[in-house]
Image (cartoon, rainbow, N blue to C red; front, top):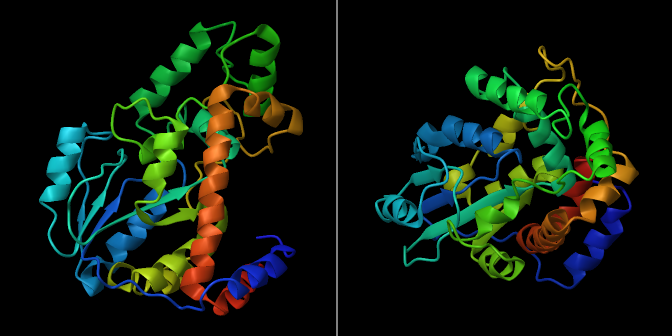
Length: 297
């Protein structure tokens, strides 16, 4: 968090009823996690808290289930059950069910996915190898052996397809829908809380205050275990020897943000980010400035 944001937070709090705000009415949790946005870390934290908080973590083997599969899974959740999976969102009549998620700045997330797909240490080896072979075969646009920033520039120069290929907006739309910005914007309002990967420590703190029946002890565990940031993958790929650590240049960001898919993802992220800070002010009240300031240290 930038230091200049503290004044903005103070102004937000003045206009919102002081917290802290706790919602203890929910007994079941749906975490349809966005890929490469810190979801695995949060699921790991929930797993550690399960015994003390009386939770059962439900992790289906199948990612991105159909609407019928997702509906069936949510309907059978019992009190204390947490559904954690890469999935879409459904509007359905399931009482006491809280939806949560975490989002990430879309260009940074696209960079992370670029390295993840060919990472044999973060992915199953056969899947990583298959992705790498596909890039090697595409000698025009595959970018095998190139860093992300180099790849964006090369593809742009050669007229290759560019964009945000696996948008996080899909988690806020019904499975298999066209997933327009309008649909995702409406569905976003169904969520009790949507955190930010860029504000991970604050995200954990807010969600613990907001939903203590699930997350009591989360902040302490996160700090004590040294989990100061969610998993981002390895720093160097042993096969391609790419580092994955370089910042995305302004030029590459502009190239991507000028594509329809990334522009839409950025628009949605801006909306989710604004909602995050409004929720933070509502939940934490006057303590938000102190909590946010501590995250700078």
